[in-house]
Image (cartoon, rainbow, N blue to C red; front, side, top):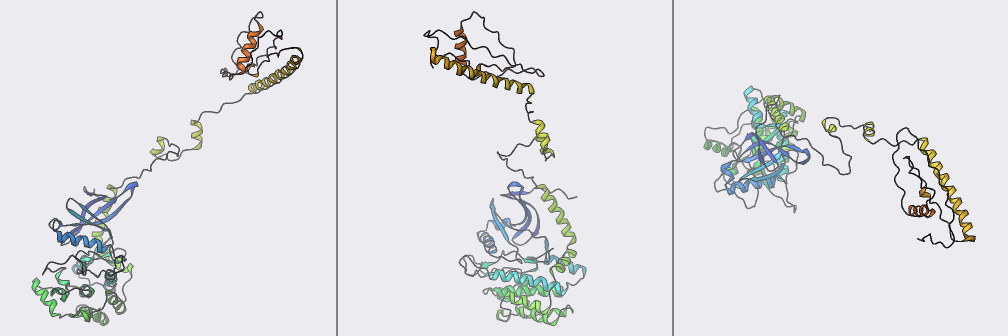
Length: 474
């Protein structure tokens, strides 16, 4: 089971956790980019050392790293994702690669007394050289060469992934030639054992300086120990300037002579005697010693870094689980409402359940159908009486009032009491005329199980005397 992740440092959108590497200028940490909608991504964050964060020159160099590295697009280069500033600190965000630095792999190999297979060493360095060539060829938006030189090629800056791909990282001491930010006078950049002779002398560095450093790394991977090792920094620089280098096959018999020749040419004291480009050296390595496949390189690094990879996998599992937030979609006003029990695991809502919750439709009984038929019959009879009365009035006097259709009562409630026979006929006619201009009253609810009985149609009133003035035209 994964251990609990420590409390992270929150910087903007990033949660920064334990460090996984440290260098002379910065520490590297595992971090998580947490976005909206549950989006999360594991990244590596380089955090500048506090003593350098307040130094304007180092800050400028750090920003140059992000700007220049963002221009490099190649599978053998660790891409830069973002750069963040917070509380007088600088953080460089890079893509996280599951793997291990070549320096660690070489150290473990020496401790076990096992030599690095020639094909593996050739494959790793051929890929790294292709990444360096991509950096050397980088251009700006106008298509102008940036003249990027890494200037710190070393085993610490070559990352071997579990996928068997070697990637160059840490352009922290790289710069574009002719730009504003320059090195302090007399200050040497890079690790001493991998400096080219022109760097030691303070001469301008070129891509051939990176070729020299890559050759030192390849020599050490093949021979199994440091090339310019010495008791003091002065002796290291002296050995570099002397240029006396033995072929790697003298320390590892498996190295073919063709590969010896490639390494020695790249280690020439004079830059002009080396390979013109890093790509040319990579091609020469592949011709001299067929490189191992990515699968073989991945198996080799997993065997050497098994414990470190397992520990890091547990750390990542704890980090990812601690920053995991389930995404909740934004509510859609047009979408139907899901009941609360659906959010508790019942995500499906059946149609039958919806129908049970909906109000039951009103059933129509045969009694209502009979009532409707009787009403329609009454309406037809009233229409015939009206037609007959109109014909009579056309010859004998004023029109006779007709019983409106709305006066036919169809409610199921008990019928109201009828007026007394002695009542004047004009009262009924007046009520009928008023009902003709108003909507019918709502039907009273009937008791369940009792069919409605239609109320009989009242007889038409007797015709009034001519000129009585009892009818009002509306």
